[in-house]
Length: 294
Ligand SMILES: Cc1cc2nc3c(=O)[nH]c(=O)nc-3n(C[C@H](O)[C@H](O)[C@H](O)COP(=O)(O)OP(=O)(O)OC[C@H]3O[C@@H](n4cnc5c(N)ncnc54)[C@H](O)[C@@H]3O)c2cc1C
Image (cartoon, rainbow, N blue to C red; front, side):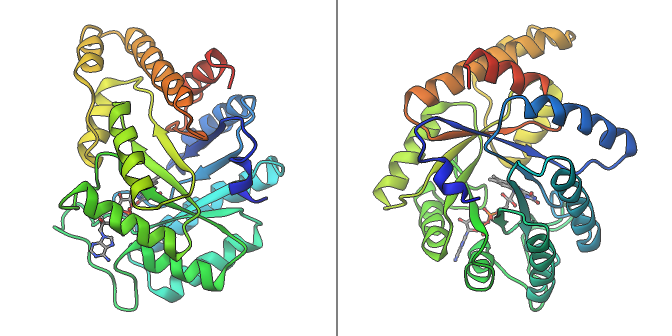
């Protein structure tokens, strides 16, 4: 399945991102939520790999492969994409992983650098490994041409980049090297996305740029995530959520309402698809997809 062609059909493509659960209970819950999400008829699903640079190579690979194997077995018709980072990996480790997912008929790879472990200051590649995601993109393009290559983009700029323009210059390098779809970091102010999209257009980045949406259903959790990835909550969203500080259902309603309006506006402004960070839950994304008949 060619994922790029999905975006040419004129109807917004919905994709969902999962992470590999750490516990048996998490796995059981994921099965349930996955089933619900499949009713929204997503174009493809993606599974993350490692997190925050703190997972060992073996652990990261094992967990992601487990989820991919299960989805492939139970949902053979849904195209599956694996995230992959350069954290703790030599080129040979990356090649070995790519061979394994190739055998599973995975459709694409989100080619990422990954983050430095939390106790270190900056990303350092292992000897024989890669320093930037663009090197992984080149490896996949030359040695595994059967995969679609997806890359990360940052509407509010990557936290390490000195400016948004500099960051977009490096995004252009990833696209020139073979990146075919840009999935963005989550954001809450659509104007940030439109500014980013305009700058990408100026930089002649002519591939689908797919906004990443994380509906806030739990304020404490989203505050933690946004502080890690550098995305900002908007003042209006924050104020409304804080009014429901001790009321989970209230937070859920505010988060879903906000995300629905955010997605509606993005679709009106012509985005070819929306990528939901579902955090292994289905309720919010299903509400939004139903409300917008996506
Ligand atoms: C859609 C999406 C999915 C993600 N999934 C995961 C996941 O599954 N697991 C995980 O651990 N993390 C994940 N992340 C987080 C990601 O790994 C981090 O944001 C990481 O810090 C950067 O990864 P990257 O691929 O964007 O890196 P790069 O594109 O390599 O960029 C990293 C930084 O280096 C700069 N840069 C790039 N090239 C050069 C160059 N040649 N010279 C100088 N500077 C340069 C960039 O401007 C940027 O500041 C995801 C992010 C996104 C947006």
